[in-house]
Length: 273
Image (cartoon, rainbow, N blue to C red; front, side, top):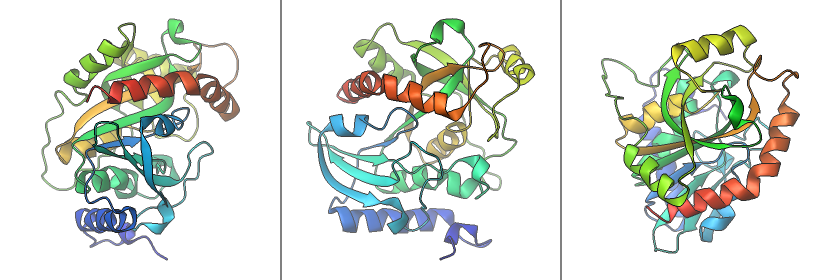
């Protein structure tokens, strides 16, 4: 079946609403309060949040497809939190480098907003530019630099990104762990890893973290009026910062080693919301 988001005259917001309606019907939960996109290393957080009400294969929902990246679970999970609120856990991220178009990349975020979620938590596995982050550090995203040369916004739609990554939510995260560091995330197009020269360029521009997701999703979340918390698991030092070659197996291994620790951290942060 052709993804309706590919159609030139399609309205991506109407498709997101249809997806949200399908989630409500299948899960039995009419609205969600919080949404989380769990990237590499973060998946186990879903098990610690509360009671799973529904676990839906993402491919059953309009506009979604099976994830192409190992480490993403491919489901949309509705979880009842201890405080009675509901979280939508997105384990089906579409990356920009998959060439499905920006609408597909941000469809999950727009769908989350249409389910009623007011807070969007975006997590990822990424490369670190600061040497002290080697070894699976969890870092709060304070801002980003979008190097994809694209945007999810269409037409004359001028969205303010001044406080894109909420200081209020970062302050709550610091209440859970005062040692959490912060950094500027730089999204490259991918899927190749950055060259050492590109990493140095990112550093000169003010970047601290390099990756292939999150920035476009954050812009779409802000467009939808959501408050955003971004977190990166530093799975490796970036090219030229570490001396060994980069590979995806290393990312998965680092995520596996840090999984229990960072998942517990994220679950504790969410209890503050």
